[in-house]
Image (tube, rainbow, N blue to C red; front, side, top):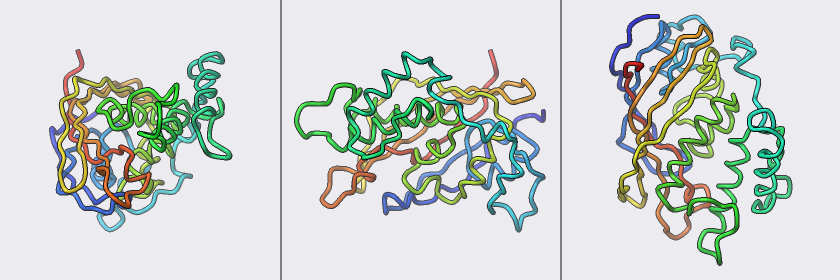
Length: 263
């Protein structure tokens, strides 16, 4: 595996779900021979790409699912991940709080998808009467912002790339196709995140920005391991008139990660 280049700067595009631009940027590690595509796709996890390096004219174009590893397209169910009893408890909470007619509260889905539906549902009822049982951290809290980062990596680890994609907002990762996003994890076997101490967030331009310090570890399908440390910024629109439910939910806004030595 090639040596790691400490930083690559990639511009952050405005999140369409928020209707506002951002002047933040992502700093990404160059960790594989296909780092040019990592730079184009703006992904922050240690990954290897599964397709040949593109020419500059094709960088950022959609990558066909047929070129991805079959393993990368196979989701891990919540049932398989945490067992029948624990999965059943999460499903029961999901069904209790979700107002959807056909919510994704099924143990055959990833735990991240179930948790995402719980968080979405709890955010809809935030401030409307007593908190619902099972909702966890208050939807406006820093802990709820950190939960977005946890769900993101839990979804990636379960290869539920649709749920991971939606942690960037209802329209997914800005400036990147979903196919390219999913293909970027084709050779990632496992990934996990540890959240650091949360500091108070910042407010500005009608939004709240919550920094979430992280340490991320990945294992690739050749058995090699990588570790990154840095900070994600999670964003939600402040309580303003005509803000939509999606805008009021926390979502990933930007990230700065750099490689660190494995202990």
